[in-house]
Length: 66
Image: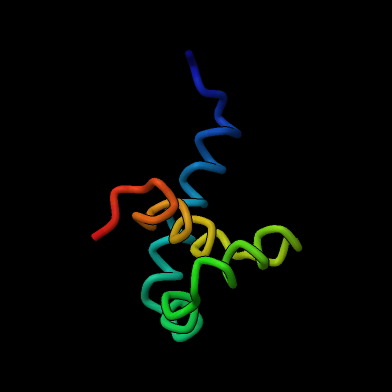
């Protein structure tokens, strides 16, 4: 399936946001949040791109985990 230029841009932005999130002070805080806290943030629509990425990576949430 071909991606449109817009989709490519959005995907690139998302990757950049994830990288930025990992290196920031807020990112450190996000990493310390429990699954429950992250889920609640996501449900209320307040989760950052990095927090959504974290949640998808957590082993207990079906991700690969570190």
